Amino acid sequence: MIIKYGGNAMKSPQLRRAVAAEIAALRGEYLPVVVHGGGPFIERELAARGLVSEFRNGLRVTPPELMDVVEMALCALNKRLSQEVGQAVGLMGRDSQLLQAEILDPALGRVGRITEVNAELLQTLLGAGITPVLGCIAVGPDGDALNINADTAAGAVAGALGQGIVFLTDVDGVYRAYPDPASLAPHLTRAEVEDGLASGWIAGGMIPKVRAALDALERGAPFATIASGMTAGVLAAAVRGEAGTRITP
View 1 (cartoon, rainbow, N blue to C red):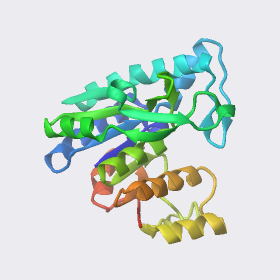
View 2: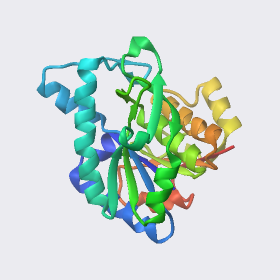
View 3: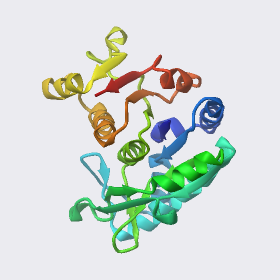
């Protein structure tokens, strides 16, 4: 089971520790792999150095002078989160070439697209009862770090392992008529998601989330669930398909 965790859902230390405990509790039934981002933590480190980042189509433009700060911020968060999960090891994509990538678009700087996942390393750790906690930094063809969107990195890992994935976000799932709570869709097929994108009832910040879910399915994940990480207790229900929106092929 792949769990993508990041963004605003990580800002509260108390909530983050609660979610970490829920991840640990899953080990009784699943073999969890955590893939995390950390936008708020990156922003804090950039601001401390007087650096400003720009976003294009939801991706952080990452010139080399920003890449070092991004990697530093994610490494520190990675170790903190792995400690909070317990019986876990914090890894970045550069470790044993865990995540290999190529430049996505030269205009974005050191932003990458995953080309290969070292699934054997992850399976070895899971077989030893250790939960891998992955920060979304990959290694490029030149041996240097590349910044990877955490949603797409998690989708690539889910596909490589052939496992379902839960995206913990700041919303309860996909709505057919946001923000009407009655319009929350508990299940959508790939075709329904494509229709939502085309007709506009999937819009705004939900677009990159569902595209990451579709990418995970395309790579081989059996399902992708989008659920809230802003409330403790949701994760286990989302894993069972009882919370959020589950998207299937």
